[in-house]
Image 1 (cartoon, rainbow, N blue to C red):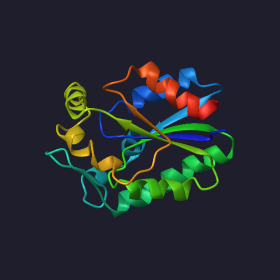
Image 2: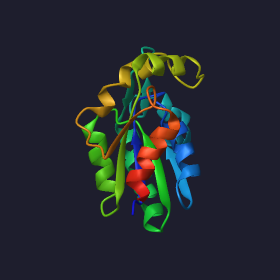
Image 3: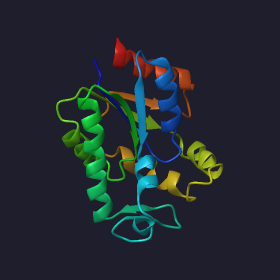
Length: 177
């Protein structure tokens, strides 16, 4: 049985929407946490300092050392929740591709993790991004490919080509069959 479902995809690829649908479709109670939760929890100073996380006007996101330290704390905190029996759906953006997956693998060692690649056509992601006030223009395009580089998945879904119900069905099949 799966303990953690980890969704990885670029900005505006549909990870959060997918997580919400999964919560409704999966048996039991699943908690959903997003990389946005971590960013929202950061002190303002780390959003304005290169040691924190920088959001360039071109859409590039650059995490600094202080951010990486807090990210590790967050990851291990979520692992502690799973250790206590919490079923988790985590949505993240692996800005460093396979290195991001390695950080999660270290934090989630010993758990059954379902690795899900959330893909989306760049034009669809850009259109979604344009409707969001919490995104810098260009993030979707900058992240669409880099987040998947070298990452190994159990399931891949494409939210631009598949109805959300089909994405949920494929994940549920691997998670709870």
